Image (tube, rainbow, N blue to C red; front, side, top):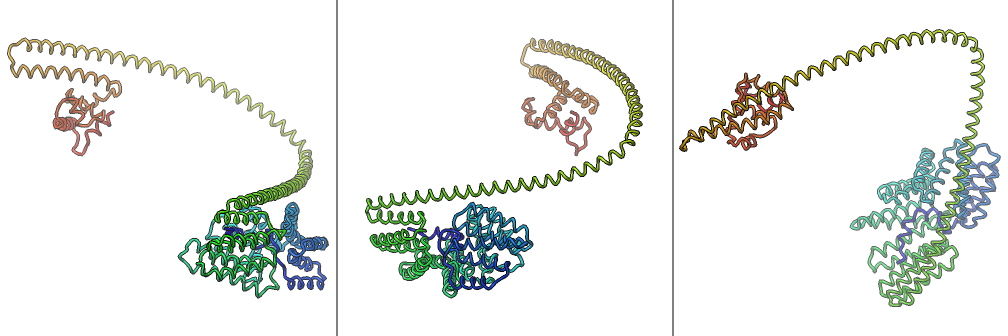
Length: 625
């Protein structure tokens, strides 16, 4: 299907006439502007009227329109205020863009900005920035375009320039459309429509009504249950057509009405049953009539595409092919038809032929489609290259201009520096003799200061040497003290080891005698178990005590001091386990006793240590570590 969806998406380019198309300027408007121009003798108003006439004449005679604006530039040379040349260059930028002279476009808009900086007229400044924003939009530089359009609105605020504000809001809505921000798109489309009502310009009204209809259609696409939105879309498109009929003599861009009629036809085709075919054909015929007058092949192609889709729905393949061929013939007749439009129609013909079973014909149509598609791609690439080349030249000029400005500013700054240097030199010469006297006095003071600094340095070095000697003596004393303490600890450890050995030998002798006794007396067995347990506790405790003595040298002494030496080896061992963070169950497993015994032992140790009821044994032991 050759759908109108692309036409709706690109609406912001089509409506203001900045893409191919020959919107017709009506004779009533042109005649009134010519009459005003012949009777006007003031150069200021003649320049403004000439710009309006050039814009109205462009689609009938582009060369005459550009020539008129070039004459306006000559008239502006005699005027000091830059607003007139700024307005003329802004209009020329628009005209050059229509004939795809991109190098001239950038030169014109740069000149417009230059002269806009030499006027206080905010209305003209706003117009220039509006033109800049539109050109940036067409180059898909949306961020730059948004900045330019917002600056234009800022300059136009309070000037009642509703026509310019209408266009600015319209393009801002287009930027949000490109970013798929439907909420802001609807907001600025409504603002554009409101300013169109204030301007009462027929082209603004047509554009506002058509854009509002498109906004309601997109809202319906998001919520197909809200049929009232679809009715609103049809209503505002009809309002656009009504204004175009009533103001036919004053309308400049008739393509707006053609788009509105085509969109209504597409709405009936896409969202209404086949019984509404007559309504769809009614609007399609309106669109074809307008497009035929203005020579707008894009609209013609979409109209024939919808008619062929109706034929396809009814299974009339030959009729669908005939309609598309008729549309292709119309496109071939119009020299302004883009290869893209022809390629789309051939794609539709290939699809119709494929559905009808004619594969050979479908292949041929597809080959023709590829030919036009390639040509369109090449032309688009060439256009992009020309735009980039023009942008590069413009950037080069801007850089050169910036360099000149920077050089001028630098020279001005340099002259100021030279002047300052002369003044400083004179002041230096006046105070030269006095400074010489002060330098002599300062030299004497420096000598005295150096002598004092040398004396202070000697005293400092002596003090440091004495401190080093005292530090060495202190370190030697500490080493001797540590050595003495180590020897005393070694003696104590040896004595303790000997006592343990003597006790072990005594216990071993006692155990041997018990073992030698005849019988299996329970008392003997208990004594034997007690001796074994005592030996095991001695071994474990000595190991544990050795380990803890290295890490916590004062731990056991503090415990015994607190308990007044009433803690047994088992108590000390249990305290060691508490310090290690073992639970009652883990301690019971290690000692081979019941957890209940551990709880009793904890209570006994707490009493020996003299702790209060609210004091925790674990916290107290941890605090000693």
